Image 1 (cartoon, rainbow, N blue to C red):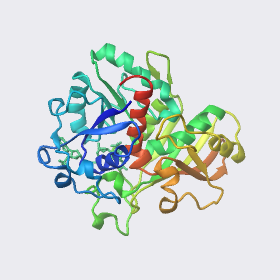
Image 2 (image 1 turned 90 degrees about the horizontal axis):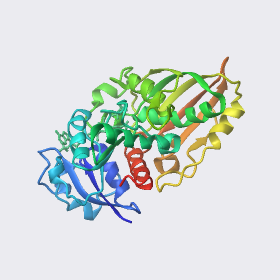
Image 3 (image 1 turned 180 degrees about the vertical axis):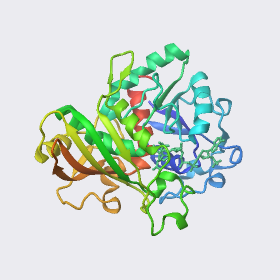
Image 4 (image 1 turned 120 degrees about the vertical axis):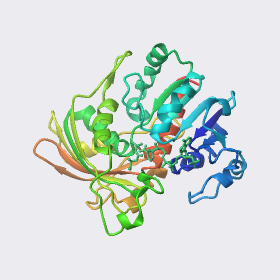
Length: 345
Ligand SMILES: NC(=O)C1=CN([C@@H]2O[C@H](COP(=O)(O)OP(=O)(O)OC[C@H]3O[C@@H](n4cnc5c(N)ncnc54)[C@H](OP(=O)(O)O)[C@@H]3O)[C@@H](O)[C@H]2O)C=CC1
Ligand SMILES: N[C@@H](CC(=O)OP(=O)(O)O)C(=O)O
């Protein structure tokens, strides 16, 4: 069955990545693109400053961009991907859900709301059924599903493997985040060249809270947050794509480096078109993973780990993922596939 999809915020950095992934998708067909009032009414080719390495797909280039309102999207669109600024997402995503659309959103608004599922399908696919609670409470025919923040997505798959096997108690993480995470005009060259910026607004709190929701347990009514303690420190560096993170963990059960590597290496993808065969690639070389060399592991949908060391109460390691693929557009597409598989569209 082909699912007709719409993209809100289609002209943006993440919107362009969504188009790159959706145009050749086996089950999804792009049927509507929206952006701000200044783009509405233009062809996608004229509205978008296209910056993806591959050319704009011909069939997409000629689509007329619509306004970001439910009325501007055809009724036969079954699934909406949203990559709007969070302030706009907070306003319009509920309107789409109320109008009956099912929305897979990458924007940060609402991620921690109690009746909004936040999922990485390989980690906590069962949380998607929180939609039943959401529909009861909000009276929506549609639904809202979120993917997490890109830095959070990078560290949670390896943490999930450790938590399952050795019971995590404490996590400390320091990030080295690429400039694409801030959007095309987010950080000026004068700020970032020959520099590193030890502050990314709101990012630390997102990593500390979203990770506990993702690794929490869902009992059919609510998500109980994982009781591990998480502390994050976030830094912007002058790489283009790929967030690298240094992680220190404490576990309740003893763990060796070999056991931690085995636990992560044995995690497989799941039966969804965008899930990679190997979710976590373990590097033995002490200087890997690196952003330029390893961000495209598993076509940008994998997480790379390495640099393992035993610590007093657990293990230390480094992890890396492509922040606009696995960390944003790819994460939303995967969530859309999960919604389809679970019969929500
Ligand atoms: N998961 C993650 O970690 C990541 C998440 N993000 C999030 O994804 C979202 C999009 O980011 P990004 O693509 O970099 O942003 P951009 O600024 O590149 O794109 C924003 C998009 O939203 C549209 N837009 C802006 N204002 C309005 C409005 N008032 N009404 C309707 N549409 C509007 C823009 O349209 P127009 O071109 O017409 O202005 C454009 O299509 C953000 O919430 C960002 O925080 C981003 C990167 C990674
Ligand atoms: N803040 C992230 C990107 C981002 O937009 O995250 P979020 O989806 O949580 O707003 C970064 O700078 O790399």
